Image (cartoon, rainbow, N blue to C red; front, side, top):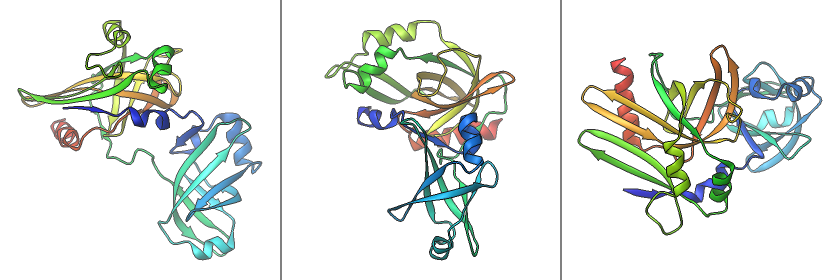
Length: 269
């Protein structure tokens, strides 16, 4: 069954909003200013916006000094923190109240990848990665290429295949077919969820935040296999000993049946 998920593309590709799961992912110069209390943050609480000074306790805990708000909030209540920069870029933190005191309350930064992460214990779990050209990315945002997902279950193999098509066409666009026949970058899988993945690849100038990718992963559990080839976007990257650790968001969330398959994979490992 083919599904068109093009309507989600513009929101996902908004380069102004960068969601983080830890203050460690802030750009270093901005991180220093922020931790030295040189910046105020915007808090979205129950539909209202407040500008407040914040005090980072560590990479995932933040204290907000406001006795009035502390008295009204409840534990586990969700609060959105927006960190404006000197440019149009904004860092966004999803948080929850984990402590309330007389003069302040404490927020815990939540992982925007809310789905269960399935880690790969085998270091030989490889993935193929194709960075999309700027030309294709622009055509996607302009609506000149539509993102299509084809879900299949054929002869014991689960397939989730994304593609780019011309409007009102069923066949893959020529540029997209050409991309898939070109040499792919090789990467090692760290974990995967229905909403995204983490992988490690060798350093490449194309592997930067906001870069669009095609990721291909073949998995086998007993007599059942899965071929996953979703479109994804790099949300963040970190230097590591093996190269670059890439945090990806899939352009469209995988179906729940894939989660059942991934659970079997981890049990087998």
